Length: 440
Image 1 (tube, rainbow, N blue to C red):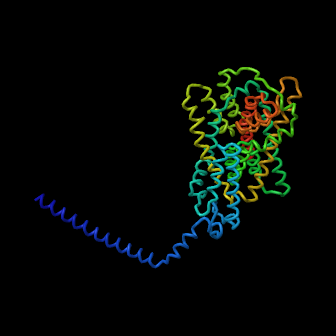
Image 2: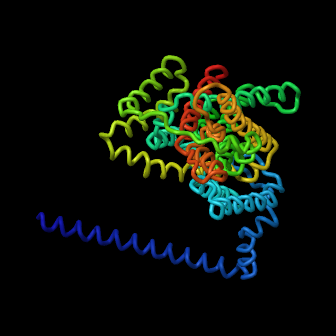
């Protein structure tokens, strides 16, 4: 009996499968026939015309009137055509600076390539659902990338030069004058009616004077998220342009004799001092300015792992694979804001102008502070290292060393410049904390 039931059940399943297969084949044949008729009814000239209309050449020459920008607003014809061409040429110029001139290729190449991708028509790579837009939302708009970058920078930082000559911290502090000076200037221009920036927006813009990309992104997300893209582009652009912007200012404010001043290391810094210092700085930040602790905490965490000497694997990861990976993503994310409709606008142009003023003032302030310090008795300070008070680590320190060696090949200023350079990192984070505490 069971055998008969199983046999009937098997016959029923075979019949059902055969019916379904026949229906499926019939439907497929009908669909194929319909598609063939559609293709036959569409002339070859129309197919070729449709393909040509979908090319980038057509998009440049005859922009889609309904195309929207990455933020959902309507794009002008200029931004869709000539604006994109201009920005693509700008990215090629950045490639040239990075490859031919060697101006911080680790930053410039990802930023420039992100800018190139962002200006490709039709593809929408920098949009909300494009991969550049996803990268931007993943780590820039939520402060994650700046925090990780600070961990890596902390792991690569040696506080020895600063601890051996603590007065160089004054140079890092003086360079922050560019931040607060630009804040006052932006507010004054707003009051005069030239621009329409709020206090929060002016504060976020002014931090560009510290030449600290992660800090600029951090404060922009807190005070002026609507300007985050423009501020990030300006800050990282000027960080990469340190070798172009700083030397003329340094040479204009110093004499040849001052540029030849040789400095010597004052004393050896013990391992215990290097272990205690990051904990002490973090404790002071917690007690006095907790708003700055996300950045300072990440910076000191990376440095503490390095100086502990017992977690070399973690230290190596922070210094190499992790910070390199995040730098790629961060550069592409920042480059996505080089899209013509976001960069070639009055607000961004004004932010770039204020940023270069802030950065120049910060550089000049550090050099002038070093000259003032030399008026008092004690070891002389080469004023060139004052420009390293901006927190572009270690770019600004390398520029100080390079300019010094132009006048004396034996005058090595790199380690001395690292003192104000790392002090500038702490100073810009503190400045950001002050601004957030005052205006958030």
